[in-house]
Amino acid sequence: MSIPRQGRSPAVALDELNALRADDAPVHGGRVLAYVYDAGLADVTDAGLRALADFGEVNALDPTVFPSVGRIENDLVGWGLDLLGGAEASCGVVTSGGTESCLLAVLAGREDWRRRGGQGQPVLVMPVTAHPAFAKAAHLLGLRLRFVPVDGGSMRVRAADVATALDEEGTAVALVVVSSPSYAHGVVDPVAEVAAIAAARGVPCHSDACIGGLVLPYLRRSGRDIPDFDLSVPGVRSLSVDLHKYGFAPKGTSLLLFSDAEYRSGTYFTYSSWPGYPVVNTTLQSTKSAGPMAAAWVVSRALGDEGYAAAADRAIRATDLVVDAVGSLPGLRVLGPPDSTLVAIAAEGAEADGGVDPFVLADRMRARGWFIQPQPAFADLPRTVHLTMQPTSIDTVDEFVVDLQRSAAECAGAPWAAADPALLAAASDLEAATLDEATVAGLLAFAGLVGDGGAGLPDEAAGIQALLESLPDPLRDRLLAGFFSLVFSARRGPDA
Ligand SMILES: Cc1ncc(COP(=O)(O)O)c(C=O)c1O
Image 1 (cartoon, rainbow, N blue to C red):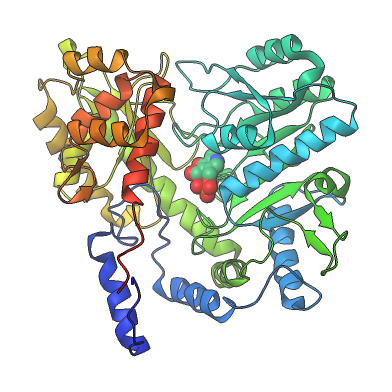
Image 2 (image 1 turned 135 degrees about the vertical axis):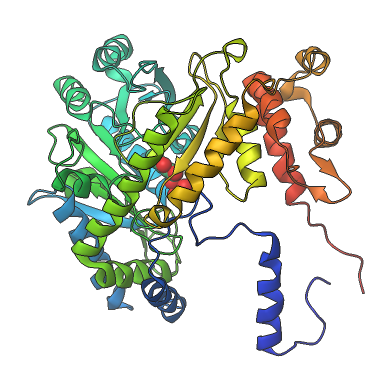
């Protein structure tokens, strides 16, 4: 049995639980530059966590039984609409995170397309840099993806390329997505141009501001030149913005804002043709905890507009310092440059010309206690490392830059991580779709990803990153899925 036969004291159980975090990356302190968002305000964080607990048992499925849910949700959506260009008719919904917001945005587009008389399989047009949440939405909701390349210099999609894609796909297009900004490079697509092109063809546009929606408005207010990206842009019918990113709320909340309730209506699911309670779902979940939205409510009120402005200011100042520092480091360059608080660092020059391998750099930084996130080369876009800069980064940025300089110096002239050609040749014979779980597990063990200690990445992961980067997409995806299958390999234990 995986629970004790006899219960133990809750305090002991909690201690045991917290001990499980021993190997986790720290969520505060500014040394982990992906996945976490740290405003550096312990009292605000604590208030959010307290609200998470206080509301954890409230069922946000039914605002008639728990009216607090309606009040909290309307306050959060109202805030989002104030900040992000909502009009009189605009509305929204609180979801569990960016991916759920993106899924519902695609659902709204698909249902709108059906109402417009769309026939056959709907198409989702998006830049190659759009977040995979949209590929997941297309997969789940039966849309075909039409990718549009991005400009190799600015990393932004070109509006003219979107127009071409729209014209070629014709009436099959249900929705166009743009990023505000993209996760990988931190740049804002030409939202206004794309939305106008889409609107001229009767197609709605979604602006994915999951990661930038609570930063860009403040950067603009402080005088930065931020392209138009919000709901006020004609043709933008929906916009996603995550409260669990730069909203600094605990994980589990995002906002999806809509131009109008008619457009939102496609995302609602109601079912009353059964002998139980009439089900009305405004999100993918049905029973859901009010904890995350309550936490976001408290954090947003504790920070206030000025708190968010200050947080954005700290994060962007840290970003600027990193961008400048990389600019003066031989062998490295910043892509974009970014519009927001995300940085993508690539090699300046090829291996033979002294370019620094971002994968090796990530390993060196990891050895110095920093997590920066490797991003593989894709099409003609180079291999990079990603940094999500945070308000707390301003306190650690000097140390970061020194360690980056040291790490880059160590990498200078060092060979780039590359996949073993023999391994690649062997892999090219493999047909991803035919590989069963056991074969995949064997391949992962061979590649060094699983050992006696279970599934995990070695401290020096550049070689593995390079191998994955070189594999054909279907095989890479199969191995990645197999890896997670091994991480989550719990089995029923023997009967006691
Ligand atoms: C631009 C963008 N969209 C969508 C998402 C998906 O958000 P989540 O991880 O909360 O599901 C992310 C996550 O980083 C993102 O950066």
